[in-house]
Image 1 (cartoon, chains in turn red, green):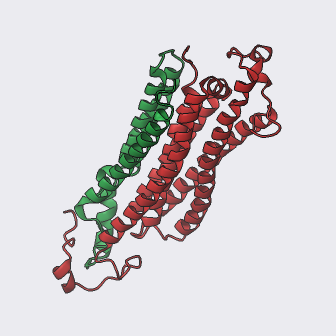
Image 2 (image 1 turned 60 degrees about the vertical axis):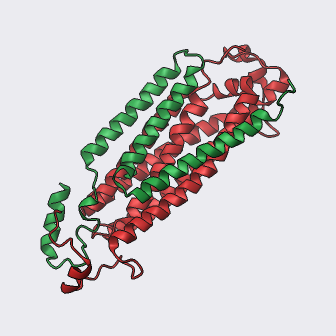
Length: 249
Length: 121
């Protein structure tokens, strides 16, 4: 008990009433309010796990069904770009964690700096993602009417060491790219929403809203941002890494 | 550093009936930048490790190792960046229940697809 005034309830009544702006009347204590907020945020994140979980399951199933097509399509992705993006996203999450710390210890200038760094690394991630998407666009690897299977039917002609696929099997690479765009696109949408929220938090942080004891918005946004990180921690190995050494069968 | 900032503030508000300066009491834990830095370095090391492992032909173990490293990194993020290690039993149980339900759903859906053509091959 670092704080000698930590005893509340009956003893608390004897003290002068201190107005805490963030404390809503329907919570007995500010501690209860804070826990209720975290609990609600976690419930939302669990629905997000189920949402992304459906996409992850589809990937698992179709990879088993169209294994050769998934291997060939997956190896089109660049590991250096994917790994760089993983490091960038982890760095962004690190600065978000430091932003929560800065709010807790009431350092406004540091909070603002950490939020800006979180935004910058988030934007860097989206920038690399845009480069990757553009490459897929140029190669006609976006599923749909203009999809081009040439690289999968005759990989040797494009300097690729992949196993050639029959035309019907090559069409199944569209399923990989469909899931690739659905999963990374949905992840990127979460990041775009997150960066929008970060600008709002940044504006409020500059007013000192979160460095006077009220840290819940920063803390709960931190949970969201780290959740988005975790989704990518699974997308990176599943989409980029696990098909490099296909099983002979 | 966290303690300095808190005690400094406690002096300004001597009557702290609503417990503004330490709303979560002694149990509220502020993770320090040094701990966050350690987590950050371990996550980067995990990323390097998974890339190296992907370049080695380990047969059926390639996806298993990749997912194992991803799960380890995710647990580190959940425990430290998301503070679950320092949260109440309610929050810990909620998070654990959510992941458990997710695994149940995966298992049941997978067993459906695996058994659809049962005996037809």
